[in-house]
Structures are given as C-alpha cells and as structure tokens.
View 1: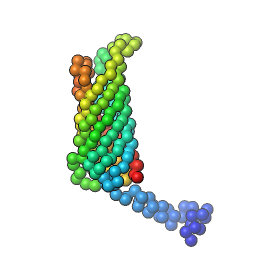
View 2: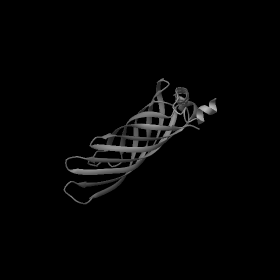
View 3: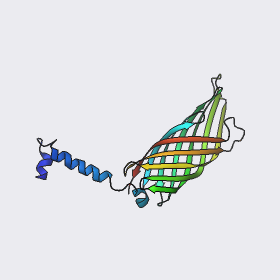
Length: 188
C-alpha cells in the first residue's frame, strides 16, 4: 500500500500523502529548540543593521563549544556618510559569547567580548579621490539575543560597540552597531 501511494501518479496529491508529509515535516522541525545547547552545533549567519551614520553588514561563522559558551568570526562591511565626509570600513571580528539569561528553551541572551581588525578608506564629499587610508584594531563588547524559530533557524539581534585604537579619528573611537539577521544551524 505504501509503495503504491508513493509511486502512483493518481495519488500524487492524495489527502493521505499530504497528511503523511505534513507529519514528517512537523516532527522533523519540532525536535527540540534547545538542541544548540545539547549538541554544540556550528552555524552561519548574516546580520545587517544601522551604525551612527550609515549601515553595516556581517556574515559570520558560529561555533558552539558548550551549553553556555560559543565563538564567532565574521567579516563586515560598513558605509557611513555625514555632511562632509564619506567613509567605509571592511574588517574582521572575532568574539566569544557567554549565555547569561535563558528564560525559555528558545531564547538566549549572551554577553559578547572580542577583537576586530579593520581597513578604512575615506574622502571629503567634494573630492574625487580617497584621501585617507587607515588600518585599526578594536576591542568589541556587546550583547546578543537569539530566538530559535525551529531547530535549524534562529533570529539574532546584536548590539555592540567597537572601541578603536585611533583616538583622534573624526568618527570617534567608540562605534555602536545594532544588527539583526538570521542564523542557520548545522547539527552534527
């Protein structure tokens, strides 16, 4: 009967087959929102958001080591513009996260700390060429909330601050970022 159901052209959209597929999908996606903490999975994410004068985008790789601790490394691009200066940044962030609040099986709030390296270019709006180029190191601190949508996908919201090494920079040495995005989990 099962073989007929799977191979028959007539029964391709039969109610029994649709119901069967529905239950398979339900059981596949509902097997534990909190598996991240049990299996210590790997994940990839893409975040985008606002900076003080513009926007930022960051794809990253995330590795969970224990129920409370994870690390992530990502490249980022930020573009900013004020009334007189155009500025963009490309760089790398490496950070660790420690879960400090877990009220339910599908929400985690973590504290972040790490370091970053960036390459910056800028020009005055009137100029046709980039008149400065700098590389900078930074210390990163912040918070990240993660809400599991199912066992493969979670939504992430991150607020952090980069404290850069150039204290005379016209953009300031404290740079705030607020980003949101999606994370896809690969279970072992």
